[in-house]
Image (cartoon, rainbow, N blue to C red; front, side, top):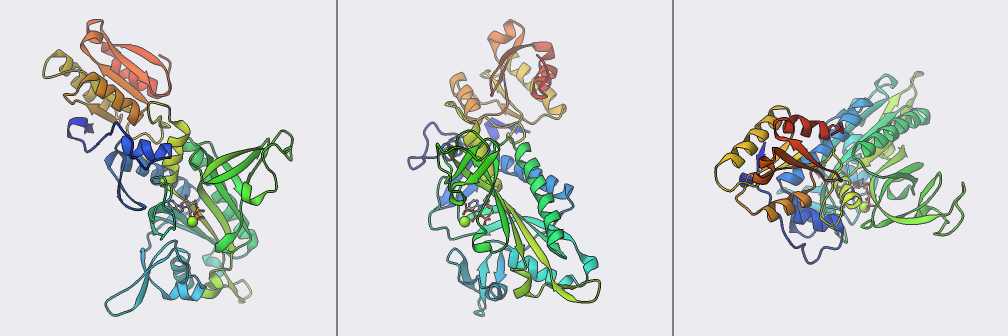
Length: 417
Ligand code: ATP
Ligand code: MG
């Protein structure tokens, strides 16, 4: 897997001077991301591993509800956007090709997916249908901020449902809502589903998925059995809650949202079908967005401590951060190499710190990067016949050297030590 001596994993002692959000500081310091321009971020190898884990969870849960993956272009003709009246949106990057034909960089994909459905769907028998992709979005955001929280280019999972009527839409919406709950639980987030404004997307019902944390731009009002976007409720901090208790207001990151679009896009783009009696009707649509980068940042915001990131196990770039304290060759090195090979063979994802650096630097980096389990193979431990194990979320153990691999794997499984 990965030897730190050969990895592109540049950690930093100090955060970037313009960073305020904890996730921004830690993602840069831990070598997960680097800035290329205003609101433009590169995911370095360790960060990319995390982002891909979120995407894999999202993909599995979409497939589990029968939502089919596809891929649509980012570069798009302007025409469908003109038809839906969204060509004028200020956040949209516009350009033209060498022939002068107007193009846009997609900020979302309602226009393109509805165009496809308009061309392919004919009859009620073709419905319902749920489709998604995980694709780059481009937005000329007025205020990019906080590392990957609000960027001008980001990846979104956007899913779309196509139904015959409102009842069908209600079923699709419920399926997506259940999938969102599983996604956010599996990503280890503390989150709330709140009602939201239907806003610029148009439509009849919408919910946002909010992850409370200090860096959030939104605010949620929380009370027992109650959660709402502060923008969508009259309640303020200190008010009695609708179901008892007292309202507290917390800042939160919007990590996803779901909308009942109705016929907002199917009508202008001509996505219709013939019903059982041969009558032509517009397809009834929903759309379901989620931002994997915001999930990563929210997980960091919610879990971090003063030493660095504390990953939920499902998102960690590696399961195990194996630190060898050896300098040069010798028994210390041999023991760490052997443990590395054993863990790797057992299928664990291991980052092996085999650098010739001092123990302080290595241990600080391990805390900063926040993998669930740190193993330290050093001369002093070996003399006592042990490998030291530290769970990032808390818990120190000494593992007998001969059983260190098996015991480490058991710790990862949440097994007793
Ligand atoms: P916001 O209100 O934060 O601007 P939005 O309503 O514009 O979000 P959508 O267009 O519905 O968001 O996008 C769906 C998801 O994509 C959001 O819930 C969020 O997770 C993510 N997202 C939106 N804009 C950005 C951005 N500029 N940078 C990173 N992720 C984003
Ligand atoms: Mg926006």
